[in-house]
Amino acid sequence: MDFYAEPAFFVLCIPIVLIAAFLGMRERPLGRYGLVVSIFMLFLLFFRSITSLVCAIAYVALSLTLYRWVRALFDRENPRAVPLYRVALALQIAPLALYKVGVLFTPDFPGFLGISYITFKAVQVLIEVRDGLIDDMSPLEYLAFLCFFPPFTSGPIMRSRAFVQDLRTPLSRDAYLERLYRGLGWFVLGALYKFVGSALAQWGMWMAPNAIGSAALGWIAQVFCFGIDLFFDFAGYSHMAMGLGLAMGIEVPANFHAPFVAKDIKEFWDRWHITLSTWLRDFVFMRFSQFAISRKLFASRLTTACVGFMVNMTLMGVWHGITADYIVYGLYHGVMLAGCHFLQKKWTFYKKHRRDRWFGIVSWLVTMVVVFFGFALFGGYVVSPLLGLGA
Amino acid sequence: MASIDQQIIDLVVEISGEDEAAEDLDMDLFEEDILDSMAAIELLVALKDNFGVSIAPTELEREEMNTVNKIIARVRERM
Image (cartoon, rainbow over all chains, first blue to last red; front, side, top):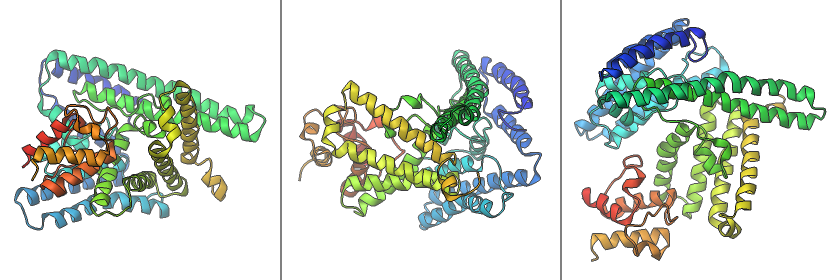
């Protein structure tokens, strides 16, 4: 049963939310209920494919084992904790890496929907155990975090400490109702985006090449509609996931915040797929930069940042898939972010005019062109055709 | 040997390149563009090198370390 797509899913959401509301209004804890419902829903998500079901169960079991192992290493102050932790981290990432490579050879390579996202969550836990930030999350709480069904298939990527805090903090009736109402609002908005907005954009994508005479303008119009479709589809899903999570008493973070008002590409990534860019910032960019600065790998902080952006964004591209389109997409955003950072630090014209109204407008226009060309790369409108590859 | 407080003030001035940072120890360094994310990382590395104090990138919220006085407090808590 596909989440957020099949009617059966939405029908099931009704009793799920009603029961959550019943519990929430009586100020009962929602944690155990959430875990039970999540296991049930995940079973429904995978039951049509035994391979998926087996892979999902295996990965959750692996993750729990790795979590308990690494916790024990650091709790007992094992002298070889750090190198063993690195082994655990590699094992945690291996299934996803294997899958991304495997699908290049067989589209049917064993995996399961949501593997990319659950990996982020499990990796975050291991890293923060190593940092000494997680020392009392129970196995049940860990499972509840990994398996929480609203954001399971495509995010938003939650952080364990915030999730566990929500599990443990009893909500008053008013506090729960506030979340429920807010959640319902986000859910309705998300549904409108996904089923109306996306449909309109897709109609535009189909119409554009036919209606517009020039091939070049037709391409531009099609890419534009594709970008709008991508937004409505993904933001629609994210808002519904956030809404459903809120209805279950969990503060799911937002993934999109008016991305098309961004005045520069850095701001864009603070507004588009927010939980992905913050995750990459906290667990890739910052740690890479820390490593580079402490070993003095590069001449200046500026160079370190620019290389950091390239590493960060290329990883993001590859995470989507090991294809020419995705790799170029990642590299492209790496170059754009590095370039933006460089200009903001070194270009005197920018420093002088950054607060001028006209500059803001021009900057926004340039950013939108950069962003939509990025969508073209992402959607296979540039690299694949150039390489003569099929869609 | 300068006190820890003074060492930290000097560190922030050195990393940001702004003497301003030493004047108001309760000024929000990020709001005033004195420090950005990269400078924050450099600061974390310097705090580790100079005071042996390890602060992980996701350990603290920005509001807990955005003024010189708060940075001093965070370091003292860990020494």
